[in-house]
Amino acid sequence: MLKPIILKIGGSVVTDKSKPFSARKRIVKRISGEVATAIRSGCPPLVIVHGGGSFGHPIAQKHGIHKGFREKTQLIGFVETVQVMRRLSDIIAESLQASGVPALPLQPSAITLQKGGRIATMFSRSVEEALKMGLIPVLWGDAVLDEEKGFSILSGDQIVSHLSALLSPSRVVFGTDVDGIYPSDPKKGEAKPFRELTRAELEKITIQSGESGGIDVTGGMKGKLQEIIAITSMGVEVIVMNAMKAGNVLRALSGGKVGTLVKP
Image (cartoon, rainbow, N blue to C red; front, side, top):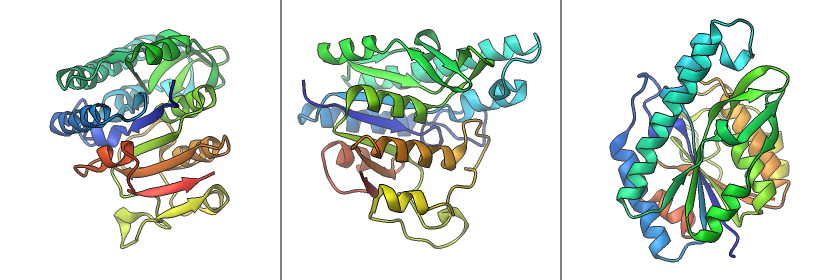
């Protein structure tokens, strides 16, 4: 089997993070079409991971799910977080399926156990078997049980890092709402994204690692950069690009130049 590509679509792309439970269905539909075109054109096997955006984060924040279990009143918040993330995953999986993509939703909270907020166990054989079948596994940031904390948040970025160690992908693509990795916050002034970085150069970049806009209980941009450093340390190249712009997802999946390339 060809080495797969792991495509992470950020919650800031598939949802409007300023409005609770607001899916950007037109963007989801357009990305689904680009994924379908890439598959028809013969791109490698694909794993898709998406973020929580305005679905999971507000409820998790309200009930303090990211802080771990403290009192029984949080339990309803935990299961509500799981449920709203399933709702978002349904929107994305159904859009992919409507475009002819055999997307198979694999609920992370059903196959993952964390310890202290990091993955301890994930039954990832189902991901491998799905790929062998020609299916497209779809996973997402989720609220999961945790051996130490009772429960915790599993970010989509950490899923990508974990699967990278397991699957040795040919590349990992992060679809965000900015054009790549910047020397400073592009939303607060004029800045141009890096075209190319090495892992060592990325480790030195701390200016951009402030919190992303809207509520984010998974660590924002800082957490993403840390996972990218971990992925490139495995010898895997990473592309960070703007999935809000038409054609970019297709370009990234097809091997074209787009966004920032981080080399191992």
